[in-house]
Every structure is written in structure tokens, then in C-alpha cells.
Length: 293
Ligand SMILES: Nc1ncnc2c1ncn2[C@@H]1O[C@H](COP(=O)(O)OP(=O)(O)O)[C@@H](O)[C@H]1O
Ligand SMILES: [Mg+2]
Image 1 (cartoon, rainbow, N blue to C red):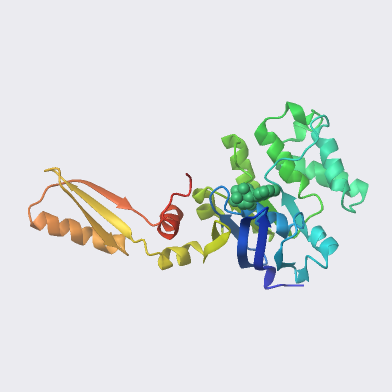
Image 2: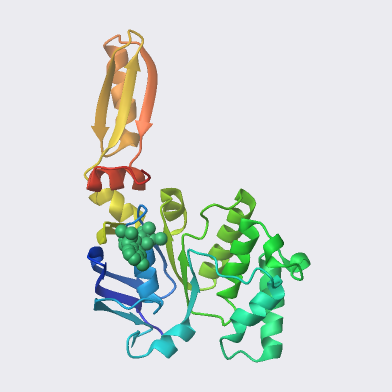
């Protein structure tokens, strides 16, 4: 079966004790797409992912996965998805292997097959040699790797990851990036939340920018850039201490013209600074605030 729309999210609303966490969130995700949900702390990323993975019920709105409504086909949907929650859930007094046997055992994978998949997955995450050590002896990055591994054992079509690289060492982060990109190349549909714009820019086919419970923009990085009111900026500082800003939609063609004009006017350029449009400046232009504040 091939679904153009692997995931459809329609007008999700959710309040917690009077706080409107989601004010009507909608987006669609294609099969095999790497979709990023980018937004600051408190934007509603975890609430959205928790509803999509059937952990939290919305007040209103609809989610379907693989053409099935999660409200009426929860079991079918759960089999299709793997969930990597923001808070790591592992048994600290069990070793990695036993943790994976437990989490994998929640799905109907035959035991021999599960053991085989656990070994393959431990290998993938570089933890084969530590598999019999208790998880409480692991670093944060190692726990995170096991946490992701546990979401993959039933071979889900769709993977939800909620800020999977927060607070871990660079080595684990790079390994997670490699694994996630491999899964994407192999055709998995991935929903990835982050407040790091670099991650969204680097990996995502499409991005939904979320703030205060609303999707305020969505599209490919190029679409977001071209629809942004914020233009690229060439800042020229002169030897006499003065400076001038030139807003442009095309640095490449305008830079040489600007420099030439100043040369002809006999003005000495000391420094040129080019500010590109990126997700940070797009977020700033949409909300008037920094992504990380
Ligand atoms: N269980 C809860 N009880 C009360 N408020 C909550 C709960 N979960 C989330 N919220 C609130 O809902 C909003 C969205 O939170 P969340 O979805 O966790 O955002 P994010 O994951 O983007 O940081 C925040 O204002 C948060 O304080
Ligand atoms: Mg969160």
C-alpha cells in the first residue's frame, strides 16, 4: 500500500487546566518524508507528538496514520509507529539487552526474531559490547541511544522523535544523526521535534514552525525562505568607521555590484558581513523573538 498522506493532522486542540497548549494544529506528512516540528520551549511540540502517538487524547481534532484514524484504530496505529519520548524511559537496574527485550516484548515479535533484531540494533547504535551492563552505568547519550533502539524493534513505518539530542555528548548526537538519516534513506517516515534550527535545516524535507500552540509557517526550507519577509542583508563597514546595510533577495548577484559602486566612489571598505536568511531569522520575523530565549 502506498499513502500519499502517511499522516494527517487536522485542527488539534488541547488545553491543560485552562492553558491552551494547542490552538488548532494542522499538517500533512507524506510517506517517507522527514518532517521537522521546530519551535521554542512550551510551543506545543510534545503535546502534538503525544497526541499523534495516542498517549494523550486531544480535546478536539483528528489524526490519521496510514489512512487510519487513531481514535478508532489505536491498536493498528500503535503497530505502525515507534515513539522516542522526550523523557527517557528505561529500567535503570536492567541491562540494555533486558530493557530491549522488555520494550520489544510489548509487540508481537517472535522471541527468536526479537533477539536477532536486538543484536542488529545494538550494533547499529554502537552498544553491542555494553549490552550486559546495567543502564544506570550508562551516560546520557548511551541511554538515549537505547531509548531510540527500543522504538525500532517492531520495525515501525513511522518514527516519532521528541527532541532526541538534547543534553547529550557530541559523539552520541552524531551517531543518532547517522542512524536517523539511514532510516530515512530506507524509507521510514520520521517526525522530529527540535528547538535547534540547525537540525531542522540539516535533516528535514519539510518543516512546521510551531509557536504558542499554533503552526505559524510550514514548507520546505526553500519555501519558508522565499515566503519570508526577512531579506538577506549585506552590511558594509568602511575604513572611516561608518557602515551601510543593503537588503537584498540575492546576495550572489548584488554583492559585486555594491562593492564595485563603492570602489568607484573611492570609499575604502574595511569589512563585509553577509546575513543569510535562515530558520532563526524566519522565526524572528514571524514572532519578533529569538527561537532560544
Ligand atoms: N501535563 C501538563 N499539565 C499542564 N500544562 C501542560 C502539561 N503539558 C504541557 N503543558 C503546557 O502546555 C504548553 C505546551 O507544552 P509542550 O507541548 O510540552 O511544549 P514543547 O514540547 O514545545 O516544549 C506549555 O505551556 C506547557 O506548560
Ligand atoms: Mg517538549
